[in-house]
Each structure stands twice: as C-alpha cells, then as structure tokens.
Image (tube, rainbow, N blue to C red; front, side, top):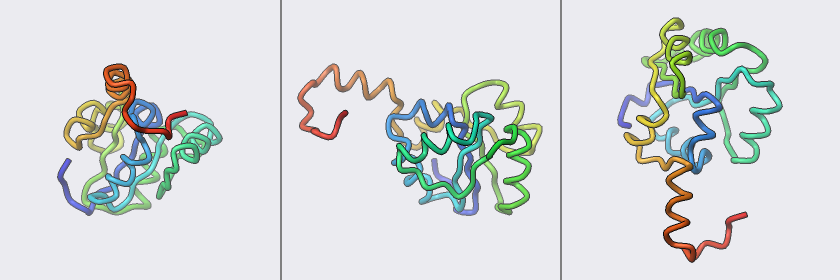
Length: 137
C-alpha cells in the first residue's frame, strides 16, 4: 500500500483480528500514514484489551460510540488529505462511504501491503512445524 503520508488510517477491530500480527501491521502503517487507530462498536475494554495484548499504540480509538459517529469524529480531529477505513463487511463499506471515508477490505489491504492474514500463518506452521521460533504460546 503506497500512499501519501498525509493519511488517517482506521482499522475496524474485526479487520485487525484477521491479521497474523496486528502490532507489526500498525508499525508498518505508520511508515505511510500520519495517524493510525481503531474504530469499533465493541465496548472500550474489548478494544483496549486487544490493543494491549498486541502492543498496538493507537493515535485514536472510537470509545463507546458507534462506528459512523467515530469516523466523523476522527475526520474532524485529524485533518489529512485521505481518510481510509480498513474493515471487513459491506455494512462497514456503507458506513465509510456515508462518512466520507475511503473503504478498503482487509484482504485487499493485506495483499497490497504484504501483511499476513491469520489463516495464512496457521497454514505455514502446519507445513513446517519446526520453524525455529520459540516465542509461540
């Protein structure tokens, strides 16, 4: 995913959960995004627990608001040339479009940015059980 550094990138929580290493994805996204955060209609503690577990430092999060309200709020707070919402559903696509955000499906984003989806990692581990890593739970 090449793009302007003048971009705000929001991930829907379910999109992050589909990635093999969400923390690494966030760090990678910071190279070409000015602001990166999480938008979800899940309770705040669910998002906080996930981001802490994955060592994600976000510039913004949705809090107890709905996704549409959150996207509107983030857009007002972070004035960049582009606002991109990475998510998974047609409903999320509609919410993005209604709030003047670009929508990008997580599968397309992963392919463009060379991020690994969680299912791809499981297949790789099955193919090569001794991968030399001792940091797996």
